[in-house]
Length: 172
Image 1: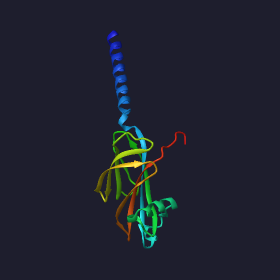
Image 2 (image 1 turned 120 degrees about the horizontal axis):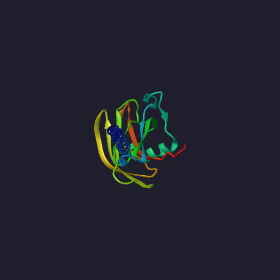
Image 3 (image 1 turned 90 degrees about the horizontal axis):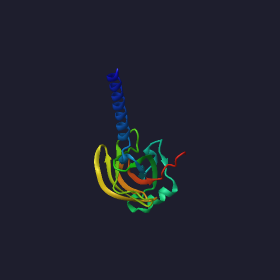
Image 4 (image 1 turned 90 degrees about the vertical axis):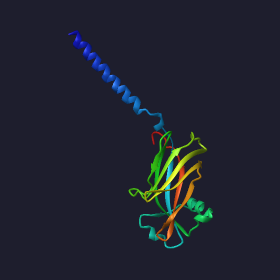
């Protein structure tokens, strides 16, 4: 009887240790979200913006003003093609896929420094058609997006925007 009781206690202790180890493995501090990054794809053209498709919408006035402020990004009209917001993880890379379900435009990003409210440093890769076309270190500041002039598309150009996204408030 005593041997059986010891065996049962040992089995229970081993099971508890496995569960505790599994729970500890799930609490990886590197996977903690330290912010959010928004990736948006715009279409700029001097021609007919309707060639971008029926599901696209015109950009708001503030975005249009920001795009026109940069000489190389000046076009007669702009359309919003897609957007994706992903968490910025403390020690791991994240991927944004703004044209879901297509993987034609992908952005990989990883925190380079501890983010503050004013600034975040990122390693950033831009992938088009499954090929890495840009690898850079960027510093995103507040409400100022980084604009990347992309490839020609349907008589215009793709413009990729990377910006810090506001944190989601708990309970909303």
